[in-house]
Amino acid sequence: MKIATQSQAVTETGVQLEGVKKSFGAVDVIRGVNIRIDKGEFAVFIGPSGCGKSTLLRMIAGLEDTNSGEIRIGARDVTDEDPSKRGVAMVFQSYALYPHLTVFENMAFSLRLAREKKDVVRQKVEDAARILRLTDQLQLKPSQLSGGQRQRVAIGRAIVRAPEVFLFDEPLSNLDAELRVQMRLELARLHKALGATMIYVTHDQVEAMTLADKIFVLQGGHVQQSGNPLDLYENPSNRFVAGFIGSPAMNFFEGTVSGHREDAVTVTLRDQDDLDVTAGVSARPAIGSEVVVGIRPEHLVLTDGPGLRVAVDVAEELGGVSYQHGALEGGAAVVFQQDGIRHKMRGTVQTVAPETGRIYLFTSGGERLR
Ligand code: ADP
Ligand code: MG
Image (cartoon, rainbow, N blue to C red; front, side, top):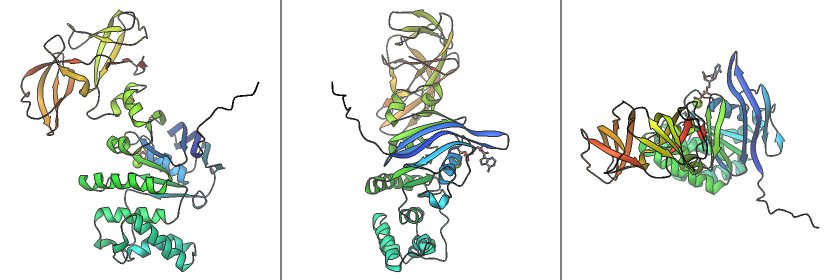
């Protein structure tokens, strides 16, 4: 019999980390990270401040050494390679342009340092300027540019080097909100135009959701979960990821298991004990054990029947949608979403029930029960 050759999607490795660790003195910052990013993928590292995102990116760039484990770019082991030989280019939050040089000279700087021919330099800078729509600004000084244009020049300095991998460390966080949204779209277009592997660090989950092919959620020196943005949203593997992805964040309610059904578990909520919530899971946590119920704000809908009684004290009206914030009788915070405008719910008690099939269940330790 012929051995079946599975038709696999052939994906080349862009960047791979295996068992990577890093400590500063006695503090373990990166505690064994495994990551695979395919060639041409837009990967995002996200996590709370101080979780090690920048450290991990700098390790890939070669700006921090790696205590153990292996870093591969393409087929090469670059763990101990000099930063200049790794084929990466990094863009930082502070764009650090040379103020006395023109846009052209700023972008040409590294090429001239590498003694590239004059006409090659011109060609590369002009190509990058076209992609970044900076052609008309090439003879200006950084002080004559807007914040967004300066950040584009910083990206241009990376593009001219034609790196295998682009590394971005919160490149938009110095820009005002409007410009951030605009630059986010430009980065998405840039990624399409260049088709290069990109790794992007942010703590902004909207940036992560909108830019990433693959998100890596970091916390406590580990990758908590990785995957396609919507998979993480729909299928978080623990309470941390469930609470981190999605805005406003998922509601969490403590409770105890009150019953088992064929295909579900019922939970009595601590802060409203007349209510049993039914979570469709096949796990069988012991009756009486403590669990946490998770429900997203967009999955709580107004009801005339039994439900969560929420005393609404703050309404965030965004026009097309509003977020009603309040608390259960026992004190647990609740936020639920209402579509449309002018709900006038502030100061009232509203009853909301979770949509069926939209209830997540976690152990008190934060692991997802399925
Ligand atoms: P993030 O980018 O996710 O905010 P960082 O990677 O900058 O986090 O930092 C992770 C942790 O490592 C922090 O606790 C930080 O204080 C520590 N750290 C980072 N760089 C150094 C350093 N050079 N020396 C000592 N501690 C460091
Ligand atoms: Mg950082």
